[in-house]
Structure formats: structure tokens, C-alpha cells
Amino acid sequence: MKDIIMVIDDDESVRLAVNKILQRDGYEIITAINGIEALDSCKKQQPSLIVLDMKMPGMGGVEFLEELKTISQKNVCPIIVLSGHANDDYIEKCFEWGTIAFLTKPFNIYELRGMVRNILRLSKTEQALRNEIHERWEAEKKLRHNYRIQSVIALLLSKSLENIDIHEYLNEAINLIMSIPWLTFENKGAIFLTENNPSELVLKAHRGLPDENIKQCNIVPFGTCHCGQAALQQKIIFTPTTDDSHTIRYEGMSPHGHYCTPLVYNDKTLGVLNIYLRAGHSDDSGEKEILSAVSNALASVIVRKRAEEHQQHSIERLNRNIKDVVEAMSHAVEAKDPYTAGHQRRVSLLAVRIAQKMELPDDVTDCIELAGIIHDLGKIAIPSEILSKPGQLNKIEFSLIKTHSKVGYDILKDIEFPGPVAEVVLQHHERLNGTGYPAGLKAEEILIEARIMCVADVVEAMAFHRPYRAALGIEKAVEEITKNSGILYDPVVVEACIEVIKTGFTFES
Figure 1 (cartoon, one colour):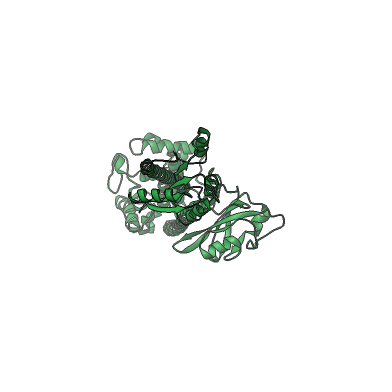
Figure 2 (cartoon, one colour; figure 1 turned 45 degrees about the vertical axis):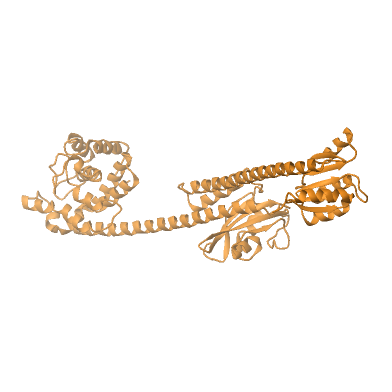
């Protein structure tokens, strides 16, 4: 593309001479006889350089320079002044007016030619540097903008990983958004979500809102006011003030603006993020970009939190069902062996307290509780006359009794309990030195849950009556587990059990 050079001079011979010499170098030449004609041309196309005579009829160089600034303030091109006035004061004034070079008439046409070539080369270099600086500045600005967006999203996502419910998370989120120092929002905002009715918004979290505001905006139907419009249209609604479109009003409401940003996931509106603005706030694309990114992050967190809550409710319901089944199994055993009614629940109670004293994880404690309630389930296969026999059992009868842990395991092994419940039932008569049954396991081969159940079972059995003997009492039970600590019973479990008993444990607690 050719450089355009404008020659402004009322002397036709000057215009012709300059035109002739500069056209040889491939420039496109535009001429004007005065400032008025030159300004009209400048409005139509931007010259690359201007050769300007200062003394012209109609509009001289001085007036032209002043007017040129008003029509092209950002991109004033280089200007070479031609003048017969060569005193220092005049030359200085020319430079103050924004000119870049000065030639005194009469001038050497070849000097002008060289000056034009050099000035254009320097001008292009300067413009390239300006463009590069501008591009770098824009890139840095974009990087800072993106960093700010990512930092907000990172904070929102980090907060979502904490063990808090969705209600608490939304309050934390609105406080976090309102606290961002580089956003020029009011310190007021709210988050609405859809609940049972998918066509209305329910206020779930807010900051800085007056009581009447909270009351009026507790439920907002889709399409009502700015938030309802944002939910319905699934786009950010901006308003600089409380105009007629702000349909929810109350007495004493202060003028304000809004960004109402929909929370959308898979084309479904989940809610709206409402940010308050000072009246007269300008619509800002950068702020909208931030709010859009924030709303996307919030929407994904809301979906996940709701899924987690649903899953938690399902787990709790499943656990309740499992406990109901376990209770039913326990009642079945007690119906078969009324003399030991309550034994399983008492063993479970003590075993749980021992596990808690040992500071075992909750899932281990839960497994122990379930296993304790049905640890003697296998006795359902033992004849009632053996279970309730008042005297000592003979060898054959005792052999039958010893099968109950394996029978219980076989009944439970295919049920998906939250933990090794069936294995604990199988091992609760194993002993540390390998003298237990049914497998003669030793030490660490025995599950910690089963080692705890073993101690709790022995203590309960000695503390309460049995068909073949009277109750021996807690003291005798403590004496037994103390004497055989490290031999039959896990010493850590024994120590924890004794601590539990010393703190006033009773089987009725």
C-alpha cells in the first residue's frame, strides 16, 4: 500500500515540484491550496505525511494545525513545515504546534525528498513499536483479567471441597464474591436456586440485604423482575438503576443497579447470582465475563453438592435398612434362645465404646456395632434344648455350639455390609494364641474388630446369668481379661475395655 503525502501550499509551482519529485519514489500525492481544502481531504483519508506551507490565504498553517488536532487527535501524522520565516522563535513555535521538521523557502527539493523518506521510515518504526507495546499491554491486561477470573474460581472450587452443606457453601460463596477487592460491586448480593418448582427462584443466600428486601425477594417467579428475567432468558441482565423493569419494589428502597447472572447447567436453569451495583454503574464486558465464569463454577458445584446430598441420603437410608434387617436377625436369635435375650445388643454396646476409646475410624466403629448385634446369628441353627441346657455341655453339644460362628458367617457372607461384618462374626471366638475357633487364627491374623468383639463378648457373658451358671459380675470379668491379656486377648483392647468400665460404663447406657 502506497504512502499518502499531502502537499499544502498556495504556490502552484511548489506543489508541482514536490509532486513531481515525490511521485518518483512511489508515493501517492494529494495537494491542497490552503488549510480548508486540506482539512476536507484529511476527513476522507489519513495522509502518511504532510508538507505544509505556513502562509496561505483562507486558512494558514497555524489554524490548520489547530483544526487538525480536533479531527484526528490520536493519529496526527508527521508534518514538515515550509516557510520563508526562519527566525528561531518562529521555528520553535512550529515545533510546539506539533511539526517534526522545518525547511526554509526557497528549499532544495532533494533535501525535502531525503527528509520525507527518512521521516516516513522513522514514523513506521515508531508506529510498529507503538503497536507492539500496545499488543503487549493488551496481552498483559488479558492475562491479569484471566488470572483474576481463575483465582476467583479456584477459591470457589476450593471452598466447595470443604465438608459443608450446600446452604453453608452458598453463604460462603456470596461473601467471597462480595469481598473481591478489584470488583466495583456494592457490598450486597444474593444467590437464588430453583427447588421443588422449577419455574421459581428461592432466596438461599444473601449479604447486605435489608429485611424488607429479603421478604419481598424470598420467592421470585421466572420472568419476574431482573432475576426472573435472567432465569427465564438464561442470559445476564444488566440494569444501571431501579427503572420500571424493576418490578419488585418496597417503600424506602434505595436506587441501585444489578447484574443478574443465571446459573445454568446442561441448558437447565439452577438459579441466579444477583449482584447489586451503585446507581449509574456502566455495563462492563469484563465484569460480565467474570460473572459468567463465576456462575459456571457455582452451577457445577451446586450440581455436585446436590448429588452428594442425594447420595448421602441414599446411604443413610440404606444403612437404616441394613440396621432394620440386622435387628430382625437379632430378634430371630433371641426368640430361639430367650435366656440370652439382649446379649448381642449389650456386646455391641460395649464393643463400640471400646472402639471409640481406641479412637478407631467411624467406619470401623459402625462395622463393630452391626457385627455385635448379630454376632451370635449362627445359633439359630443350634437346637433350643442345647442352647437352654441348664448344666454343663458335653463334648458333642459343645462341638455343635462352636459351629455357630461359621453358620453365622455363611448366612451373612453374601450381604454387602459397610465393612467386614461377616468376617467379624466368623472370628469373634478366635484367641490371640491360636486356641480359639473355628480357624485357630493368631494375633494379627484376627481382625481388630473381631479382637474387640471377643473381649466385649467375654465381659458380657461373665457379667450376666447363663442357663448353666449364675452371673459372675464385672469384677470377675475384668480379672479374666486382665489375667489373659496378651495370651487370649489383645492387650490394647483389654486396656481400652478396662478404661471404659472405670469411667462408669453400664450395659444399660
